[in-house]
Amino acid sequence: MADNSVHSYRIDIPQAQLDDLHTRLDLTRWPDELPDAGWEYGASLPYLRDLATHWRSGYDWRKHEAALNELPQFVTEIDGAQVHFLHIRSANPDALPLILTHGWPGSIVEFLGVIERLSDFHLVIPAIPGFGFSGPTREKGWNVNRVARAWAELMHRLGYERYGAQGGDLGALISPALGRIAPESVVGIHVNAASVGFIPLGPVSDEEQAELTGKERQSLAAIAEFTTDGFGYNALQSTRPQTLSYALTDSPVGQLAWIMEKFQAWTHSSAALPEDAVDRDTLLTNVMLYWLTGTAGSAARMYYENSHVGDWFPVTNSGVPTAVANFGEDVAIRRWAEQANTLVRWTEFERGGHFAALEVPELLAGDVREFFASLR
Image (cartoon, rainbow, N blue to C red; front, side, top):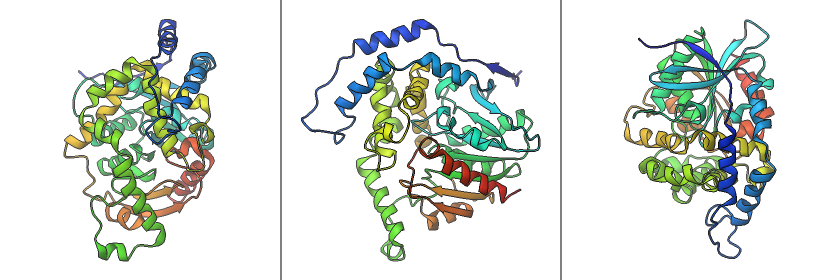
């Protein structure tokens, strides 16, 4: 018989794991780098050396572990996977429940800066199966739709039959999928860093291009550049995640480089370095959730599952009212988003990048509050 119980959870990493991390950082075998390479070939060597030194000698995991443990955390088993989640109830008993879903290479850490700003919601913030303390997964098939089905069960298990959904990156795939799976329960969907279902997939005809606005042309050009020059991680995680996992699970600097290269590339272009956009220790806490749980490989497997299982692509419109927040580096294009979603709100921001909840939490939270207030 399935165990539907929900248990309180507390993070308590054994000191031996932290000692092992420090030893591995001390013994890092560094690669060479071409003179003045910067970030052109990937993660910058001088930057990674400096950040790894801070990770080894300046970063205090116990401080951040304690801060996470101040938040109510729980685990429950759904469809054979452990699901770890934060559950922060509003002081208003009649508040709307809202499930927030992170992306890759993010985690529940993404949402720490919006919790107080969204205190008028009952917040459920789960780690995607395969990520952090919801990982690793133990069987094949954990793609977007399976996660969305798990989220529907999680909200039902918590007693929430009417709720909103918000997410960015993978969360902007999972949240609309949740709307398709449980349209009778999801009152609204809010996404940022949206891609599939919100952009064209494949070539755009000359006739369509002739109709585009200047901003839409910029987005289309950014999509083209990303899928040619910035898509290597996706190709590898979608095809050979196991091979990648050996390096990232064995080497903390390997794991650090794999994640920080994306934070450098995907935060707002005004930020030369990741910590120009996001607090340095917050960045490391996010990396720690991958390192301490050994979930680099199982998180990457979601890309494989999405590209090898045919039921995840959005082919139907759920009818659920949907809002898009397009931050400074986002590339969603309204005319394509309208084909798969019931759009009722579209907001453009000049600030913020791919990790809006970390970069501009006040803007994201404000847009979320305004959208769901319109649905009450």
